[in-house]
Figure (cartoon, rainbow, N blue to C red):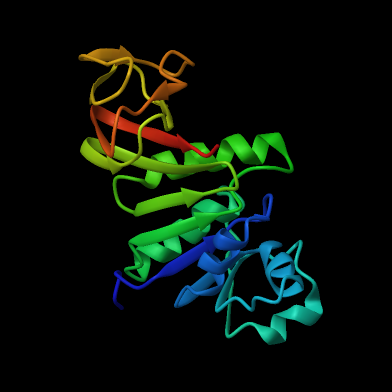
Length: 206
């Protein structure tokens, strides 16, 4: 399978209300719904290509609408982890992820930990109504604009982070899980983040 396809993964969290983000989901070549997100997508007029999960949340009448139903019964992993495992097995290694936030706070945080665990294998970008979130490691250049709010969050301890073109520069800053590098600002049309370990870069919408 071609891992460069436009693939949207929709988690059963807060569904976006921004029409541009909804269009981004609808225009994907492959739409993967995680369990109960199948209900939300179909109720919004978008039929997922694939649904993955243990299906404790899905409307049974919607199963026939989906091209491929994949039962993932491993109770030791979340539905998101099972979905990311399936994507790796099927060479779907570039993903746009939606619905990460909202609803249950433990699932919200768990989703970030799961994506952090997989981001050295899967290239993904997370879209919400409030932010574009990019997991990354090493040197990454981000398209931006002057004044854009930028937050950097590490789920790893002693993560050495260096930035360019941010208002408050990071120079081999040892970042651990904390709010120490949030609410920075871009100084122009791009900025660079370099890290020794995995982290997430939040570009906050106005």
